[in-house]
Image 1 (spheres, rainbow, N blue to C red):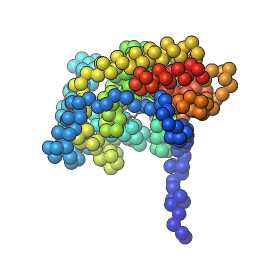
Image 2: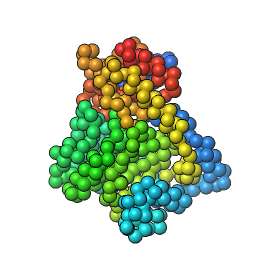
Image 3: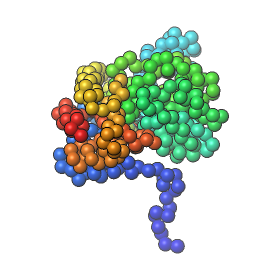
Length: 388
Ligand code: PMP
């Protein structure tokens, strides 16, 4: 039999359809001087302190593997950070016996290759064929793909038009097969923030039904209204945090997961045989980054958010984003276009690149703009959207 690499590809790989985003990028590659509001990463650079720490780590020969769980100084610092942020559940008011990282003894912490790495490990550690994973629709594309890769079934919850993953909506979807519920606040692609009462209800619901609540808090720093986390309610959940967005370090691959020790131990075991560890010099950079104040950058993004809401609201149905750097307007119905048709129209007539809602959703009625762009590009993009 002749060698045919295409015949070797698994059903698992074939099942992933990356055509939505690729199509937007393919169209964009043909443009010169496009207005690009499609990118899911901050437009600011890594803070100096983090860059210097990374190069110092490289220059001083700290280039080997770190322990799978992560480098001790960063683990200590992150443990302290979480204990300070959630004193009642993870800190000194929790009443729990403290462990070596300053977190309760029953709570584990693992440094990962980005939040993506943590998601891979969490799904591989918990989900298997026959299991269901509840997630928001619209939602971050990776949740559904990774669930399928683990052999489990994604259960997207329609959250239109307010984009809240409420406990009521989730409860209606929980079955005997549900293993996990994934919450993402502030959310990609909508920027919507889950209020504290919903965090509590979701936590209680998941506790009650024996389901793992995974809270993807990668946009926690980008919150223009009070940030709330179910981690403030109790410890029986998995918190995922990252450095990519907060510090403009998307290419550096650093994140962490905190949660029930037995789960974190399984994730660490899987990390040992997959990623091995997060990049060592990046862990050194993360330790420096965590003390950098990003308030000027966050304030600038708040102003961009205000500008987006102010300019688009008269023309588009838009749920105002309370966080992240995305807005998710509806394609005006009178245009009679799907999200995908609108995106082609925007590229062809205005050289504007945004992402069709169908990439994140079973519906094709909306589109995502990223306002992580300089003011000039953002203003040109908003002009184009108003004209469209
Ligand atoms: N979760 C969400 C909601 C995201 O938007 C992203 C990045 N786009 C990630 C996780 C993964 O981020 P990283 O792997 O860079 O930490």
